[in-house]
Image (cartoon, rainbow, N blue to C red; front, top):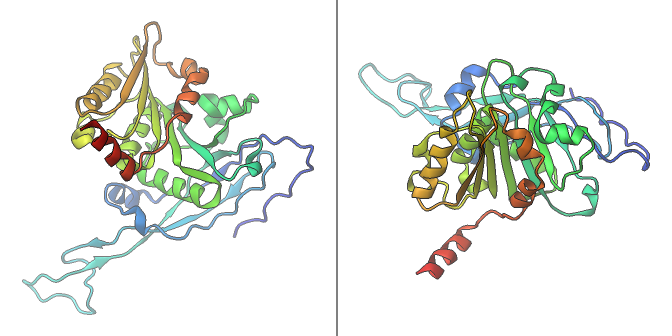
Length: 312
């Protein structure tokens, strides 16, 4: 059972808030379904949204989703009886995957005054995994927000459980829930992350390249083949890396950017000559990053077609 929402504070109270929430996945199903799901089959989620202006509150939530229907041979027959030996019959597996994932949620100071807001999804690195949301505030936008910085975005900062890696399926479910419950401009959704979160950014963008307006992966990497057939051609990319990074070589970002450019996509890379693995502090402290993100909107199929025709 979910508790009642926190009482709304007086108008004089601070409007800066980040609400931790909890969304966990069953690992056995998560691993098998993360590569074969249909986001259109995701259904109802149950979660109690926080009140605007509330300070740090922990609100338990359970996101229930209907997973992809898998057509399987010789497993859970559609008919009431099993197939005869030596025969093959159509079958279907339908399961529900409970997802539970902790995250910080930030709404802009004047959230209620605007109909729609850009959304920035931030993915932390391996060192911030666990069950303590204070770890998520160690780096990046959550750190800056905790220091009093105001952002013109809805900022969602999930926490990856200990011993695991970012799973695109869970992040898709989280974004679906945020879009459903808050005033999100779906043409201005951005993803950024550092280290493990940089890898998670690349992977999520590969899974749903047409969902995002721009991405900014930091000291991460991916697989160059993800860029084949123009997968990233409509997605602006600005990657960052330290030239002296001994944890994740800068070549990992260089390979991704080069692969996108070869396919005709828009990608740029900033390499800090003297930076090691920490190439994120300078990046997130730079207002130009956020200005660049906000300058991009998701390209619609019609816009992409018009652009192609104008080039002919």
